[in-house]
Length: 79
Image 1 (tube, rainbow, N blue to C red):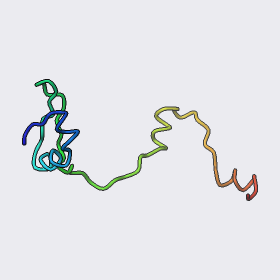
Image 2: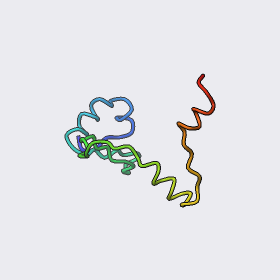
Image 3: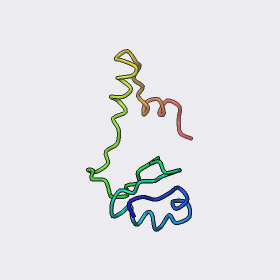
């Protein structure tokens, strides 16, 4: 199965998904391709968290205030 209709996708999803694991499947509606379903695993490295400090400096620039959260919490006391 290299192509499937929207109706087949809705009613026979496990079959369409199994075909997509073997290779890309064109999804059609009224004879026109509207999507391509590709369930082959993506090759990527390990997940790394975003660098929020670099993002904030890029957005706010170098003039933003740095807050020491540990000192701020210590001044407020414990809950």
